[in-house]
Image (cartoon, rainbow, N blue to C red; front, side):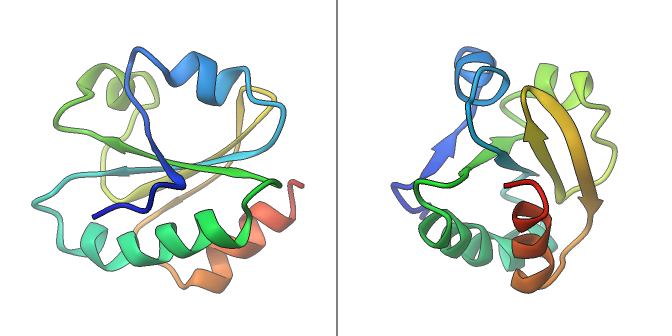
Amino acid sequence: MASEKVLTLTNDNFSQEVKNSNMPVLVDFWASWCGPCRMVAPIIDELASDFEGRAKVGKVNVDEQRELAAQFRVMSIPTIMLFKNGEVVDKVVGARSKEDFAAMIERNL
């Protein structure tokens, strides 16, 4: 269960929430059947709370949003990308620690 602070990103709202955002946006590309994605999920929820008001955090379900996954060439999940001014400025593939993801955001605030 995602925190209310975590945006559910779709083809319909991606431009508005990510590309046109005035703050950095951490985006988790995931799927329900992916074990490492489930390990990362609570970390993503915590980051949404930790960075509230300074950065946005969102999730893209790659099974439901195939166009977005293809657009950003997501080959393995979880893939976590950081967007700033609508552009990808950082990207990691696979599960990482909360500290690693937090550092990704901090570098781009």
